Length: 199
Length: 384
View 1 (cartoon, rainbow over the protein chains, first blue to last red):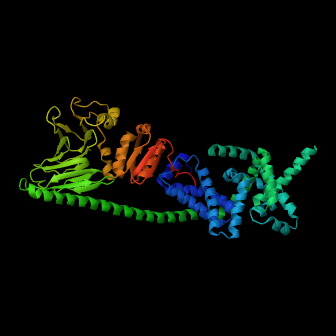
View 2: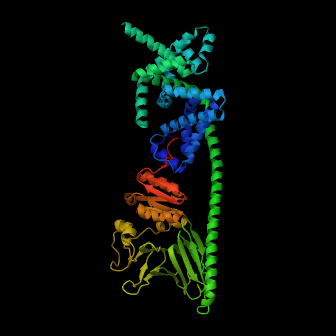
View 3: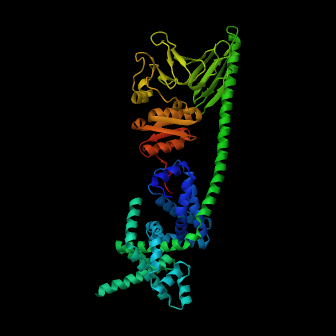
């Protein structure tokens, strides 16, 4: 099932549940991952994404034209995450854990200039990236998988494999660079498309 | 050559820093370095963004199973059900509100009957009669059964009034505002609706009459059966006209600022001004109308077709019990079509904004409309 932006807008304004089912199927996991990358917390990420959907539902009939539902969802999730972190920081004023989380998130967005663009397009890259991983040199692939798929810290990978941590860093950066080169054409097109939608 | 080598070394170091930042393992000095590097060249920023996309794509590949969209959707539905119950409570309070309004109507009815009764105690020596009145305030609507079994729906800001000998020899009521009548058939007792300027006579029929004091015309639309319409004023307007189903009669009062233009704009434009008797105040439009559209209001449906905002505003004011203030003249000339059911004024305005951009603010019952942002301009639908 696929819907045009117009159909989605219209259905959202009618409070049609089918459109929500569609949006959940299409975007829920990646929105959660996005939220998790900001909040660095799985539970909070899920809460935030759920909130965004509920808010969207509550606004039925009030929604102005949404040019891209995807951008709308991603930006809403991002803003909710940052608000949520700020809220947590206020509530737990003296809780260093949350203060640090917010600081990390803000740092990250300072660095990336808060564009969110690259996160928007990650979704479209899955298949291509999955294919390209298999053509990486073996050690490269292994270390990358340990870092990204098993969630191991780089120091843990180093001690597991009995190699220097600097090797882990360099292997992963090589893997990333190779994947980037392989996906470059897609990336450029996707970035252009996203900019077209957002601006 | 040397500088190229240097650049390659630099890139490798930066790539490692990028990985650390993405992984969340970078130290502050490395973050600073990355920020500086990103600021040097748009190309660097592109490299970073592309790397970040790949990084996130890997995360999505890995975590897709971790986030179960089906489960999340089910819990979303449950939460919505709860909020539906909440809004059900809202609806309940709306019902209470409606009951209160009906109660208000009844109070007004009994109050006036009482008043009339009091008054008619004196009058009754003369006429021996008292009368009943039903007043529907703005923002409300009511349905009632007359003593003869005739059903009447009264639109907002309307009233009917009938003597208590109604249904003895003839059935006569007085209407101000808009009403839809489903008249029960009594062969020997014609049903007569009297308005400010015209009289509508019926047997067993359904028809709608719109006769608001502030408006320049009175419209009578026949849904089924047959009615006869007669001007109250003797003279050239007193000729009797009769209507067939889906026909509409218009009476021009000849008062108010260009009432004909204002109120029959649609008729003029869409159906031509041609009528059976153009020289008369009371005319039957030659083109048939969709009578069902004229009585949608009784089912709580707000319907308008290619209507000027200025005219639509009057409908909205009655329907929702609000007052619209146009801060810019040109906005009054916007044209809208629409059909709404079970809505609140905010939803109507939001929908109209879809069609033509304007701004509005709501302050209790007062709504200001402008073509420029008003303070506290409504930004509800922006992502927050």
